[in-house]
Length: 76
Image 1 (tube, rainbow, N blue to C red):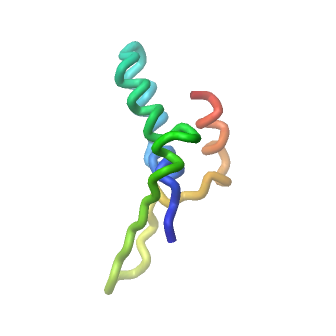
Image 2: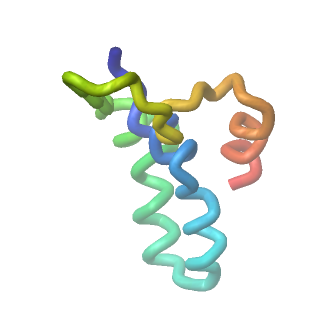
Image 3: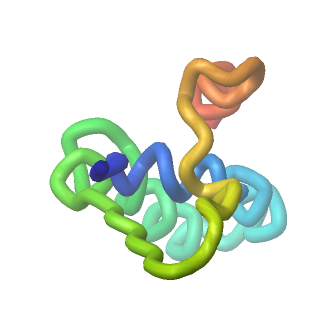
C-alpha cells in the first residue's frame, strides 16, 4: 500500500541529512517542507511495487512505530 512521503523520507534518513546541512537555512527549510505535517509530507504518498522477486525489505517502508523514528521527527 501507500506510505506517507514524510514517513518514507524519515525512514530513509532525511533527518541525518538535515544535520549535515546545519547552517544552510535555505536547505534546511526546503528539506523540512518535504516531511513536516501539513506540507508535502502529508500530501504525497509513496508506492513501491515489485514483480517476480521475493518481497524485498526496504528501509523507506519502516513504520513510524519503530523505536526512535517518532522521537527523531520531534527533535527537528
